[in-house]
Each structure stands twice: as C-alpha cells, then as structure tokens.
Image (cartoon, rainbow, N blue to C red; front, side, top):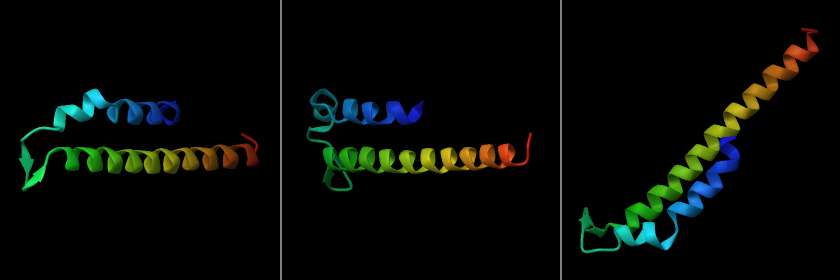
Length: 71
C-alpha cells in the first residue's frame, strides 16, 4: 500500500506551494533553506523506497518458503 502512495507524497511535497515555504531569506549552515528541503525530501523518498522494497522482498521470500514447506 505504501508503495502506491510514496510517489504521490513525493509529488505533493515538490509542488510549488510546499517548495515556496522554504524559498525565503532563511539559511541553514549558510545555504538557502530550499536546497536542504529539496535534497532532504529527495533523499528521504529514496530511503523509504529502499526500505519498502527490502521488506516486501523479505515478506515475499517468507511466503514462498511457507508455500514450499506445505503450510
């Protein structure tokens, strides 16, 4: 289920109303706040996608193992 919603969450977070929240004078470590926001969201989406595929693969392997043992 999360694999379906993850791209939509990313799409919403990269829409102009959300991005413009960080397009201001504030700086994080001397960098405009929009940079860490964009790359942080991008990195988080990649990390969550990796974790989702990892757990889905483990669940699939467990299901195949259970079906193979006749349970």
